[in-house]
Image (cartoon, rainbow, N blue to C red; front, side, top):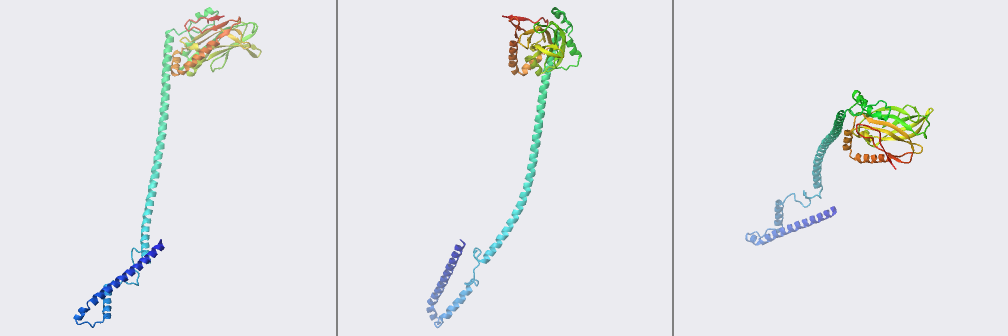
Length: 405
């Protein structure tokens, strides 16, 4: 493109020069025409002897004086818009260099301002991030405190309901004379009702001892047993092992004979919470009959006592003939006479437990049905016996047995 531009520029210059020469020749011709046209006038003036060459030279001198003395054909013309000449290019280069220098200065100043603004933005961004982190931390802390307060409030509300239920149970127990009384050792089954009219030592222990508002006492009393002569001899010594909840197993003293009278009572201090109420509703007390053999012992029979009756208004279970199932052949090895009771009723607490956990009701009912089926045992004479739950009234009698063919 540059070469084409230079070529076109040269052609333009030649055309311009040719035009100027033609114009000049035209002007000379016109001047000559004017001159020759006025020869008649010169003749009239008596100047017909004037030399034409001298006249042309005079005209050329006059024209040169009238033209621009700097406009010479052999000199290069300087045009500001013409960039093909060296002076114009130098001048334009200087102008571009000055403009570039100014632009460079402006760019440096803009870069400095941009760096300063970037630094300010970075500091502001860090401050905003720190504020967000602090806000999130404070929010999490407040949320955790709120959850703690809600949990604490819920626990306190449950505690209040539990204490109200215990107060109602205490008032109920006081209104009913404190329930049954602790025993002396009865000589016969008919003496049990008379003994129950005495003062209740369990309630005395709770009132006199160091007990919290959610604590209670459960007593298991092993009175005596009747063992089949096919299982042991009359000279053998036996004892009963009691296993309750998560406490250590308790053993009665060694007694000899087929009708041993153990007269053994063990007391458990329990905390009445949801877990313990669920245990009473679904689990049982384990009774094991063991035969002493030198320094060792042999397991003869087992029995279990369903504890759901302790959740009623009169928390007492009296079993006069609880079958002991042999561990060898599953037959009845004998019977045990025992009593299980709780110092204070927990009916209201159990009702609150079911209200708080309605999904436990169906599970507890299913376990109760299974326990009822498991209480059907086979007697020695081939008949079946269903051991019913002890009555929940204040007068405790012997446990009933309903025979079925």
